Image (cartoon, rainbow over all chains, first blue to last red):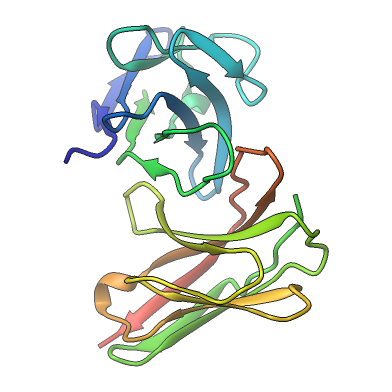
Length: 115
Length: 110
C-alpha cells in the first residue's frame, strides 16, 4: 500500500538550471497539492491540481514555476532558471476528494538545493 | 480560517502523556480543528481532527472545549519517536489549503 511517492528525495541544481520534482499520489487519489517549506519556516500552499486541471495556483510564484498533473503519470512541479532562494523542501499531498476531508497524506518531500 | 496559537516548545518524559494546547478563539461554527505533526526531515503526518466532540484514534485524543475556543492534543504514552513539531490547524467550509504556523516542538526525553 504505497503512500505518496516523491522523487527525487534530494536534488542539487546550479543557478539557472531547471528542476523537475515528481509526485505520484496514493492509489485512487485524483487530487494533488504542492507545498513549499523554506528553511526555518512553515509549509506554504503552492498549487492544487486534479487530473489535467489546475484548480488553484494562488500560492505559486508568478514566474519560473509551473505545475501539471497529466492524465497518465505523476504530477510535476517545474522550476525554471532556479535561484538560490528556491532552495527548500517541496512536499506533495494527495486526497480522494477536494473538500471536506483534509486528512491529507503527504509524501516525504524533495529537498532542492541550488548552488 | 481562524488563527491558532501554540506554545513554541514543550518537553515530555518518555512513557508519560503529552498534552499539547492550542488556542483558536476566533473559530467559527463550520471550522474543524486538525492536528498534523512533522518529524524531522519528513513530510507532515495527519494525526486527528474534530468539530466539537472529543475524538480518539490509534494515535491520539483530541479534547475540544465546549466553547470551541481551545483544544488539547493528547498523546497518551509518548515515545522518543513522537519528538516532532505539532501543528494545530483550523479550517472550514470548502477550504482545502492548510495553513501551517510555527507549531509546537515536542521533545520526548528518555
